[in-house]
Length: 252
Image (cartoon, rainbow, N blue to C red; front, side, top):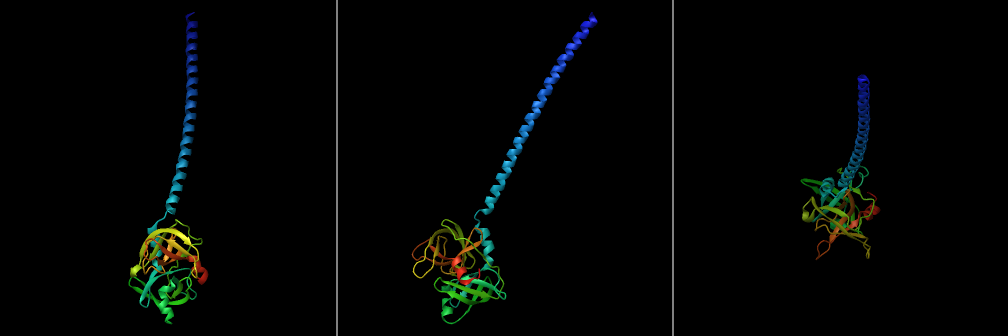
């Protein structure tokens, strides 16, 4: 009898333990499922954070950076000396036929030399001086093409017109001070008036000597040629759209 009771008791204990082990197994399985779901969620969130970080990096790379623009552009910009007058000129496009470099400046910078029958001007950078030839002029749009035998990197011209509010950098030699950099925005695009062509109005500070210098967008592309500053006013500069110059001279 005692043995029977002992067997029954042991069976009951074994049954309870089996039930508890089964419950414990269910709990462990549920815990595993929760952990897996949490890991999947963490992975999804991590992927999302990585994508957001990549987007922010791209946006930062595309942000307007005047220092980077100036560093890329300055080696291609020169002070130009035409007789008693100084202005700015910049290399543009691919190497000239037969070697050398093509450049743009304003016609009014070289006007005295051209009208006097001369064709030679000089490009200056730091302590260096390079002779250049006036190849062709467009008096109406105030543009002149120069060519020098020296080899310099031509700036890339923008394929699209600028828009109001677009940030720009202007590089030149105001009052003869070469490698001067100013920044601003495009204020407006002005339609043709009288005999002159269209113009870009911008608010970056310029002064005599900036004439002929490049107006550059955030992608380091030339959008215009700085031409004039409005008299008796601040923050009103004008530039010839680069498309006007490129269409007229075919060197971009």
